[in-house]
Image 1 (cartoon, rainbow, N blue to C red):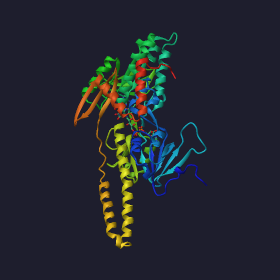
Image 2: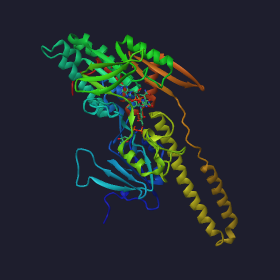
Image 3: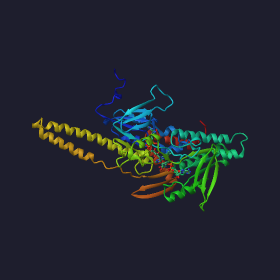
Image 4: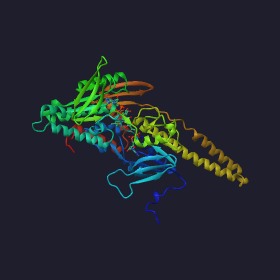
Length: 479
Ligand code: FAD
Ligand code: NAD
């Protein structure tokens, strides 16, 4: 009857804490959580953490994808008490029965592919999926830019377009189409990707495939009147003028309505307010129009009456508790706490929740000590002075611990790379806002990301990739 791994047996005296996801929110929580206080179970279809800010650099091979991945097993090994990890997707959450239904969606499947995991406490950090607004053709024909697989797809596709354009006797119109790279969405994802793409072309493709180089074009399509709507006006202008120099065509006030395998159909609003239909033939289409709610979250929202009016995700209170539930918290892009869906917000929320859960465990431990001592007071009258002193001391500690202030987000600033070794930054400095742009900002951008990169191993890998691609050029192999 011996269990093969004694650590797998949950400690019945501890509560089971289930954490969904291995992204910014969940991993920040895990890093600071005192895991010995709970039976911790992590569930995610991805067995690694992904450093998303450098994902656009993977689409062109400036950085190799494994440099920005950190295995969750390595992160968990560093914890004091063992943590269970299941590589699985949560398909539904039942807040009444307190169970999460999970299934194995990976390629290799065993006899057991679907089961339930009971929880006492649940933290949801499943992020968001790509918004397509139901626009026809988008899912079938576009590349997204959210996961490692997306970046690999894009990298392959860019080279496929280039090699196909260079194919013997390809017609000029077809070369133009294949060499036209269209990006939909002028938020930071679309802008950073367009910048990286232009660098790739200027620094490498142009030299190595000169015969088609004058046909390469990047177009960025944005429905609003300007790109980077969340940045300051000055930086928007700087980005737009840099893009002009880089020969990236920006089409603002242009809304994509339909996508086919070779064209993007959009409606542009002219200055006089009239509408114009534009058709963009493309070789590569990258769709970056922001976030949509994941089905597992939608399903949970439908089960909770208090979430009836939530649209963009799970409404949470100032302690990140999912409104209308007990013992469920949400962090990051799947939670609506009044902040933008960014890594900065998700990681601060994760850190906050770690503090909260650590405190809750300490509180419970102290309260049970107080209860225990109080019950012995009458039994040991000779010792009562000492017992009272201990109770007082525990109560003093309790008062200190219980004082957890609500979550407060502290914005450190926004940074975006815009190509040609330039970046834009809205930074909060000494309580004031500073807008910076250009080459120095780019150096700041690099060092800021390097210091944020989680492990020393990742930091070294990223530096190595930067040096390698600068010294030898990016690798053009289509793989
Ligand atoms: P994620 O980091 O997306 O993690 C979600 C996790 O949940 C993943 O592990 C996923 O596999 C898992 N999961 C998904 N479905 C399920 C399920 N059903 N059950 C269990 N687990 C599930 N923000 C910044 O602040 N600065 C930046 O520079 C920046 N750059 C970005 C660049 C790109 C290209 C992108 C796409 C985003 C960028 N962001 C940036 C935004 C940032 O990445 C997100 O806001 C952040 O990842 C949100 O963290 P999260 O933990 O909510 O979700
Ligand atoms: P976003 O929501 O910031 O931007 C999407 C853009 O697509 C919007 O400007 C929207 O007007 C446009 N759009 C929507 N539908 C359209 C259509 N049919 N046709 C044309 N344009 C359309 O999305 P994102 O850039 O993916 O960013 C998502 C989140 O991640 C944001 O919170 C962002 O701040 C964060 N992020 C930050 C960084 C950074 O700080 N460097 C980088 C990437 C992402």
